[in-house]
Image (tube, rainbow, N blue to C red; front, top):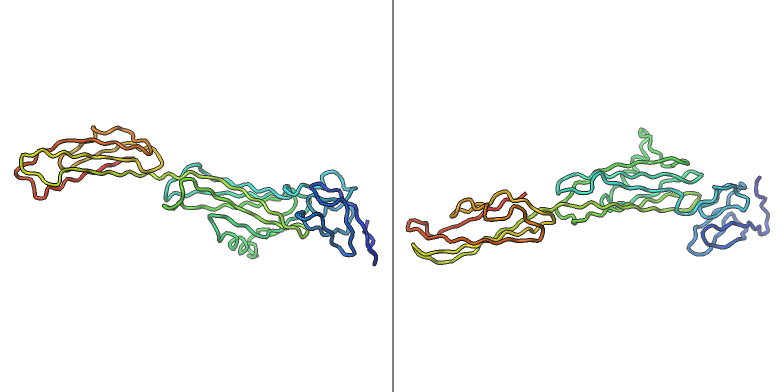
Length: 268
């Protein structure tokens, strides 16, 4: 039935599911609970759910919902590991678990700051069947790709926060997922004498270091004075590790002056 209104205060007793006052009185259509609880707009219909966490004492089972179950948000990435320049495909799924429609208000994503504007444009496009209001048990799926950038952190955390409104109360949900970003990197240095004469022995020391965040397998190491020296280095260089090797070269009378000696290291 319809709640009778009068010029005097009326009082509605509430079952409190998640804190707040047990009852409230008002001469208007609005009552409030304890600070920190959702603002409640009274319904004109008995047994109608007013907002998550509150309901009439006579409400049937299932009509009173915890504030966290008005809608759910799930975010997934299509891979756990990615390299620079590769695409990560993200999927968001929003599901209305309440007994009434919920209305889209906003979405913020740490990797896609302009995604909310794009979604609103599609909501407003009459040629697209994209609902701003999500009905009971309805779902909204969003898919978007992100290209890994060179300056992305090794652990790329992506968080999305979605806000929906139901009966003048705004509800928010967040979810995140983490993708490990592979950043292989190697450095090579060479030291040796600055001055020498024909017939002198010059000792060169080559050091390779894994400066990335993944283990590296040796391809080859070449040296302009000593040719291919790959066999002098280990087949695997663990992340954070380095390896040094020294060899001696006898300066020849027909060597160029200055004698340029270059080393090249290839890992994968």
